[in-house]
Image 1 (cartoon, rainbow, N blue to C red):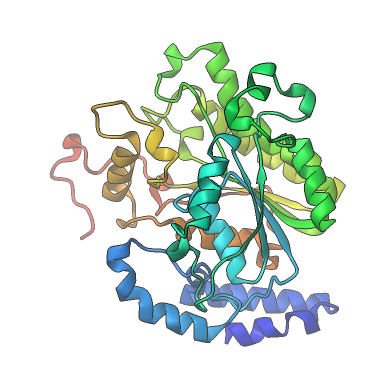
Image 2 (cartoon, rainbow, N blue to C red):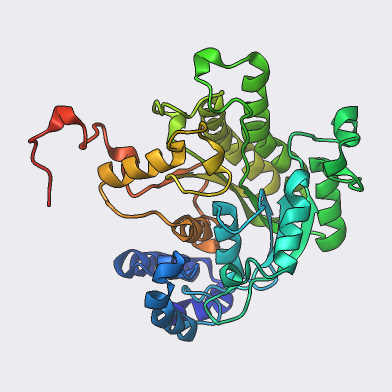
Length: 376
């Protein structure tokens, strides 16, 4: 089985040819049997969890190190942009935790206290559960405001803001220094953050300030993180970001310069794959994820109207080749692949995890296509 094959990973590490053959066979088995979806234990809505309880028990018996049997014990991951249990960043952290990785996160200071309190009060307990019945442990939570590279960049109004009170080290360079102090080296860097203050405005109505703010928080922050954390990453480590199809197609309602920011993020991914690959020996990829009703995504709406994210989810399900719900753990499983040694030769890639929506050139639910034959 695949799990048995991967148990021999450490034994084969010295034999590169044997390792390559093993990885190729493993990937073939993944594609044939769909085992990669078992990595994260697939978090479902509460109404469906009982149906999957038996399946999770089987997954736990398959391996104590996650569905693929990949052991990442001793590896350290830093996930920038986790503030609740509903987003893709959480799902990626959970997928890595299933395999034994140490999980650290960076949280935006204005929501840091709420996030910590929610964890302490057990509000995320159900979402912390791993396939073996244990709970994911977040080893450390670092305050992180990724629009500031150094302490000198922080303006006085932020320093005096009560939501930043008592936080002396929340810039990217300071977090990198803390990570080095705490762990020496890390292995995985995940960029799961974005912000566009004018995201509900069409591009034609977006101010210069709003446009640049979106690109600063959503794209340049990834560059800055790799600049400062890359030097403390182990060789063969991996960095990953999250993008969206608005980078290349027109998505009405996703404004404020965010489409431009995602386009920049994807372009930067390719350049960083080259530069960081040569300089630090790490891989750099991005996942173009389909719409998910996370807390952050739900903010992209206007009062009194159905939210952008709800419309995007409905559209995706109606028009994707795979007409089904997309879960955070679908992205978590794909991220696990890109971050793990299974993807040791994959870098500079934009991987679509959107039920195939990116491949569609027409909306099949359009009134203009009424009567056209579609597969049942």
